[in-house]
Image 1 (cartoon, rainbow, N blue to C red):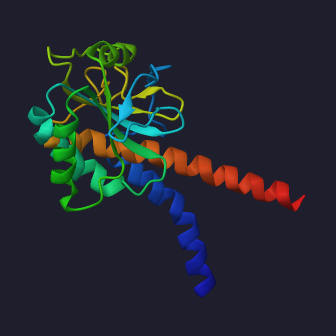
Image 2: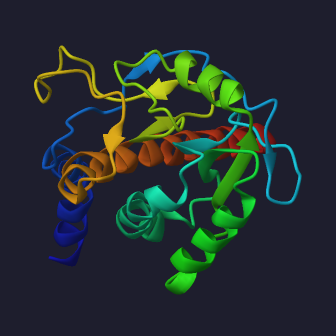
Length: 220
């Protein structure tokens, strides 16, 4: 009887995994690539004056430009619904592109959103408005930056600097989902939460496969 129970659980695990990913809004096994080769952050510096890059990181990319104070509500929504639940994932970073001269506003916002967990994965990167536009334009979306080089939409960028989202021809979308409107808690909850789960699961599976193959190589 005990052996039968163990076998039943083992056979049920794939079904549980399938139901988990198919129960949400997003039914993709992998989050589709919408735009390849997003511009690297070569001309930006962090609050500590260090370089920052998209390559080899899963990035939640935001554009606050010169209006960090006006984007505080967006940051809080993103922090509560996405960051708090996923910040322990090793290769995940939350990057905010902002204009030079807004460092003090960024420091203030970091203090305000650090009431629940450490904001260590929040990375403010400062550059010129032209550099912010360069990166934004490389996304090739249907959205626009406002006159303060900001947008409420945030974007999921994979380790190969590709924009991930939902294409128009999927069953779930009436229009291509390039990014997620952080003004709307409902949109974050109903779309982005699920999509972040999918891409993190993709990289977890890739890491497990890599470790398994490495272990096999070491045994031979």
